[in-house]
Amino acid sequence: KTQPTTTMKSAAEQQLSPRTQAALQYLRRLKPLDGYSIERYLASSGKQQVRLKRRNVPIRDEGFEEIVLDRSAGYVVGIQVLTSRGDAGRGIVLVDKNGKLGDDDSSVTVQMANVSTTASVSRGNATRGSGSSSSSLPGSRQNDGRASSATAGTTPLSDTDINNELLFKYGGMALGALLALKIIFTALNILSILVLPLVYLYLASNCPSNDTFDAKKELKRVMRGAHLPEEHQPKGFFEQGLNRLAASVTTELATSLGYEISMTDCFGAAKMATVKVPVANAEYYWIGVVGKWRYIGQREIPGN
Image (cartoon, rainbow, N blue to C red):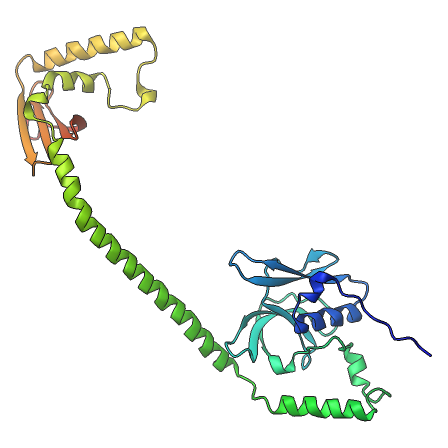
């Protein structure tokens, strides 16, 4: 008598769904030397996904909800999206009926009623040889009849139905995202209403007075390039001393024939200082805020 053989499954394979296990067993029978395996892992989205490997090398980088065998076409398909009812899915062909790896990224629709859920699926030529002794048994005919009636009693979803369901799904996600953005912007508006008065009070209490602005001192700082980036500043002590001396002489010569200072109050929170130097044919601007005067820039006096 022939002793029945048992196939030992690893702990990782036992965690796979019956449909994924059936697809794996089918591939191992179809191509026993290709070393097919299926890896189950936690994706970055937080969902459990599976990935098909051949000789321990992933066939595709992306993962799938399930890897199933479509009995009607003989394809092993990686399911990317399942309908909410779970009776249809859309995915990519990983292995065709001849055992060739799929190289087309176009999606196919799989009716889950046509998906094998047992590991007893063999190659297509074995299916075509259904006149063998195993299929001639009364029990086999009864199982085939039940499978045929179950398949016939299932109304397959068309591509339009799946597209509509996906449209509703992603439309709901987009609507939820818009609602979340609206809530965020509303919270920011409320926060700005509360914070702006406090910011204004802080600026007003630290606004420098007109007496703290020393025109000659600020002009000297501008002439020696104190507002420039550090890489444009003189490096050595000797160079810094010459730079300060040149700035002092230039400032004294420019202001020797007089200069004009005008102050503009910005709602009590800041002040704008303008120094007009006719000899240099230029106007210089500073803004006084939070207790300090900061140089803004200069321009030529128009029409002079």
